[in-house]
Amino acid sequence: KAGVTQTPRYLIKTRGQQVTLSCSPISGHRSVSWYQQTPGQGLQFLFEYFSETQRNKGNFPGRFSGRQFSNSRSEMNVSTLELGDSALYLCASSRRDSTEAFFGQGTRLTVV
Amino acid sequence: AQKITQTQPGMFVQEKEAVTLDCTYDTSDPSYGLFWYKQPSSGEMIFLIYQGSYDQQNATEGRYSLNFQKARKSANLVISASQLGDSAMYFCAMRGRRTNAGGTSYGKLTFGQGTILTVHP
Image (cartoon, rainbow over the protein chains, first blue to last red):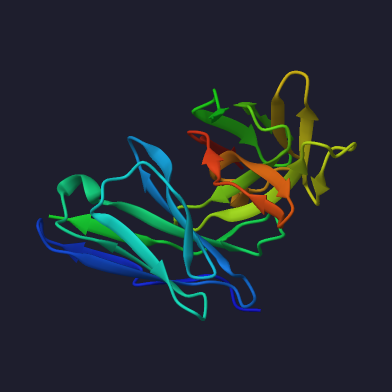
């Protein structure tokens, strides 16, 4: 059974650019959540999608957005990148009726 | 609101010994789940163990056990017979559980700051 797949694994972008990260959940999982991990702030919740609908959103500026497709794959977009957006972005998938959340290997974004 | 506190920034243990990683929590949700994840240097968050707030017995998964004390709001992870490969960052996390006419759903995961475990040979 394939796990959660995040692409790309590493990314270097320049301030002001935009970036799109992708997450393919475990087959059969319809819930996808995104988290940002930084040394200073730790792990922070960005948003959660279920059946193509955003169900929950964390306290991040509007530059952070996401979507989910009919096959449950999710994308996260960050526009007008800032240096502080440098982080490890983790995606987790779960079944709606299950408490367990399984994570991908993350995308490490560096903004220069 | 939910809060997870891990008071041990770093822990050291000798190979083959047991170690306890501390976690206390606070929540207004009447029903919730508690988790421990392991994060090696590669970055992936590896699920270790889960405890439901209404589970009568402490959870165990191989060498991992969760010492759940609801009245004290603590959910400590015990790793028995430590191995060199256990060296990693460990996170305690929780999520609320809600049941309504539409079924059961779970809130976001709230994480602690983590504990770096180093296993010495």
